[in-house]
Length: 168
Image 1 (tube, one colour):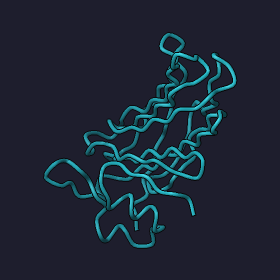
Image 2 (image 1 turned 90 degrees about the horizontal axis):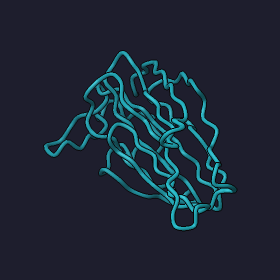
Image 3 (image 1 turned 180 degrees about the horizontal axis):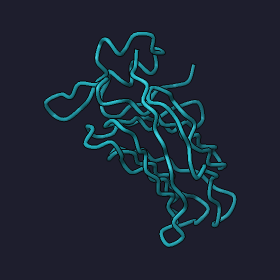
Image 4 (image 1 turned 60 degrees about the vertical axis):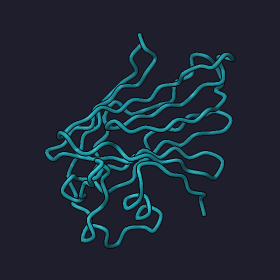
């Protein structure tokens, strides 16, 4: 079973860069998994190994040549994923809470990019005590912490740095 540690996520849109910048703060060092879901598929990425009790989160919409087609880019703790979608306007920004209080071990919905296709952004934070780090810095969930986890999450938490799965 995963250790439960309270985490505060706080952030906002930076008008200069057009990015949402946030920080996840906790009393314990953390690792994370970013998940982007669209059209029945989910791409995921693990963060780097835990270095501190807080780390940066970003969400950016980078326009392509057609400014309505954007690359949704999400980073968390040094790891990240991206996905292209068509948004309704060049000034579109998804709604994100200014503050969010969560616990480690919970997969949370962070934001929805209302585009074509629609992109759902989720995040899971894990206390560093629940993971072991391999020789190349890749972390995996410890066996004793893995009990009771959903099968798709277990594959992510015991797998490589990045991956993809199809929703059931």
